[in-house]
Amino acid sequence: MEISVKVTVVYYSATGHVADIAREIAVTAEKAGAEVRLRRVAELAPREAVESQAVWAANAAATAGIPLAGVEDIVWADAVLMGSPTRFGNIAAPLKQFLDTLGGAWRKGELADKIYSGFTSTGSPHGGNESTLLALMHSFHHFGGIVVAPGFTHPDKLVDGNPYGTAHHDVGGTVPVGDVTRNAARVQAERVVRLARTLTVTAL
Ligand SMILES: Cc1cc2nc3c(=O)[nH]c(=O)nc-3n(C[C@H](O)[C@H](O)[C@H](O)COP(=O)(O)O)c2cc1C
Image 1 (cartoon, rainbow, N blue to C red):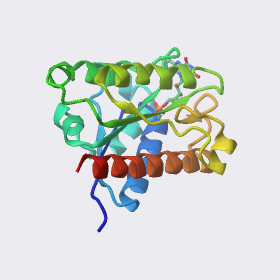
Image 2: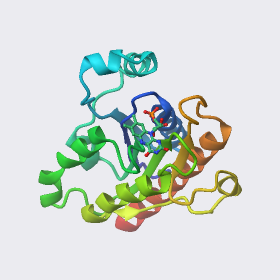
Image 3: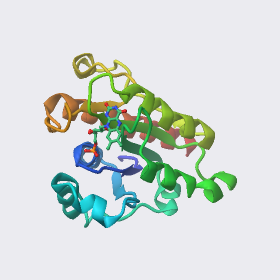
């Protein structure tokens, strides 16, 4: 009998790169047998700002059908994968705002003992993808989470080269998410589901 695991993929994305990775992770986790919730966090930028950039407006329209993340989506999950674009070497404000809504659940211990893992996208290869992934992990540690990084646990990780999490770089918005990033996302999602399953069995 396959042990059922619940995975929430929660992300912020302005111009679609992180949204693409989130979808890849969600599809992979589902194929690996997990029950998956794909959730986006609410946009904080004013509508005029979003509409001032065609690519931003297009991503907002394309992802409007993805439900907004709520605290209950984190509490529900055995494993949570969080993604954000790099903003000045850090996570984007909308994801941080969402993290700040988790205080009540944190106080009740409802965020602890889950698996957490992060993903990101940057404009340049050394523009802060690692610092963004590590910034996400700060919060995961506060939650009492079990941080699962992909490490170099699969040959595909030697290709993308980031042991902290899946990280695309869009070369100033010109390069869409491609096979290298998708492969890394699949490795990460499969690893998270596998370890979440192990943890669930251990807790039975
Ligand atoms: C305000 C702002 C700050 C950014 N800061 C960085 C940065 O520090 N380093 C970097 O490489 N890219 C930076 N970028 C570029 C984004 O991280 C990059 O385009 C990312 O792929 C966007 O992801 P998205 O398409 O999911 O929104 C920044 C973009 C914005 C709008």
